[in-house]
Image (cartoon, rainbow over all chains, first blue to last red; front, side, top):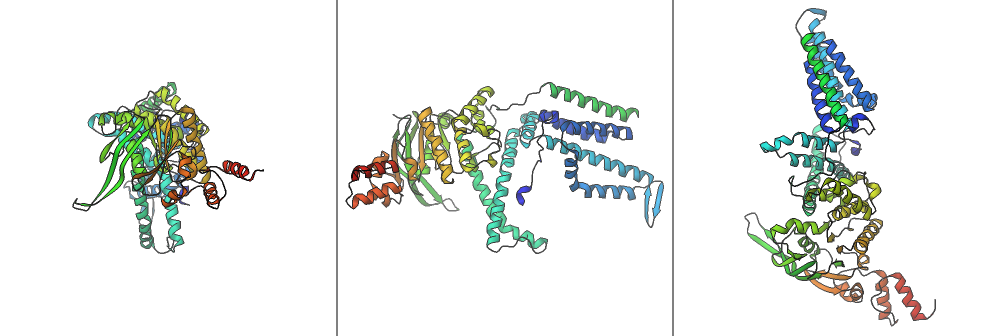
Length: 266
Length: 286
């Protein structure tokens, strides 16, 4: 049950987008998000939609699969829309009871909905097409310059990838502890929220102890294999830009300039 | 002087209370002298708490002796300038396969050691390939370690150590958490490394069957070396082994019991084949 949780939800496919350097995808996602807040006209959104549609098509990730992932945020989207719809002052359009829908409210509500859903589809496209592993690699490389202001970039990236490696192991362990406790009469299912949360305490304690023990073992194993931080370290899979990555940066730049142009001249 | 040499190696665990006062001292390893030749297959045997794991951690410079010294390939483990050379030359495989795999893909994990040593990228790939092939895990190079069985994970760990091109490998109960099949897989891989690549192997275990092929066996008890000799010599001392709470292989035990009852079988029978041969020789027919 608990093991079904997939983190990073990578979708395996053989596409141009999958093969891009993770740095390109990170930059592109950030760029795309910024562009959504740069444009404020319908033309701009059409351009953004077209851009996004092309990327989804290129990524070979089925659209249905993506929408499924959006279910979780429908609620947030709805709240935003409702609040914007009713609470924006301006020229009244429809009035029933005490609620008024204004022209401005309608416009902002739709715009926010479009923005938010594009934002989520755009960033999930990144996690769907990039393995958590290469994502960490990309981040480490992008953040590289921060090393000069004493940010432990390599260490943070190493921690992230170890955390990712241990998620399934710890989930399995949680499952085991849960079953062992259920077998001895523990009850995780019934009761209200507070009762359920209390039932989790005896689960968390052994889990934490075991996690610390594992951390201790792993640290020893890493030291035994000559790990001594990021210095003097070479990479088995170094990130290198190739033609496709440069082309992708070009396209991204074109799109971004286009968005700015639309904002300025339309 | 051999590849690994210890001189009166002693290690004490010191327990302290909250103020830092010494509560008690446990001598985990007590004046152990070892001299291991390059290319040997050494087994260290002992029940829980006999000090065998503590001894192993000294060879990789994870622990430092309280008294005495340890040399790996002529380098003193207490000399900090050689620390990384020692860890490269004496690779270590631990008990729990899950807690020593760092990479999220098999090949990345095997590459971890060479990456730390600063080996150029191209050579890392060569090393990863050859070491995965040496343990028979090359087909699994793209797998996630979580999808492998215990025996396979342990073989990946061994590959990760070989990729660092060590002169010797210390395996600290590598099979303790595996099922019988996984145990066989791992021991087969370790023997192949010793036979084919000539890597010195120090195998720490409490399974008797695993030490049959060793060149030399050390039995530890309460931090001392209680017995030492070839497997045949060790197994011919059944009573002593039982006193040290170690299980003798069933064939050896059977032969021993038969001898006591007056059946004339040779001492130190290790395998079923030897036993049947000896029985046929005794009865004079087959």
